Image 1 (cartoon, helix red, strand yellow):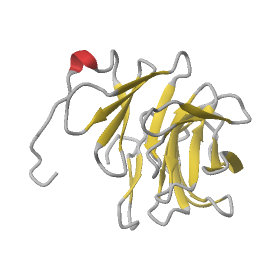
Image 2: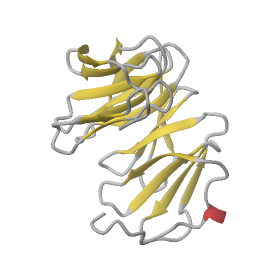
Image 3: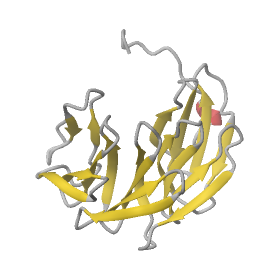
Image 4: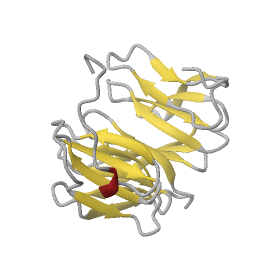
Length: 209
């Protein structure tokens, strides 16, 4: 990232059969995980080579993904809402279902790995206890699909974006929306938070960052 030069490319013939829609680094930076539109998750060593693990959704429809601090994986699914896969072997460890039955488009986990949020197709942002793997509650943040979620560095504030063109800032402890930004992109909306927690990154109605 210092020079902007490409240092490695992973073998496409051993990768996803369709487009890649989510990426995440492991906490130690030694592994990279990718989610494809082929309903597969692939775990790669950042040093290069073929994927060391491929997880097939078998109809789960994987979307966003995140590493937990212990090295396990949490991913959004349309089948349930969230799945957790164990560290190292990446075996299925838990299925966490949302009440609506519509699943989730994205997931985010706070820096401590204690709280997670899912981006629901019912417009809800569900807050999860990642230790007990139970829902702590939900916020009806949007009137349409929630497309993306992200956490601020403080681990309490989450941000969501939706096809309703709104960005919502959510307090995951009080389960309340504390701010709204209008006029965001309706399709392929993005949301992110800078590492110092001072700024939000999102796209407007003209897809400008």
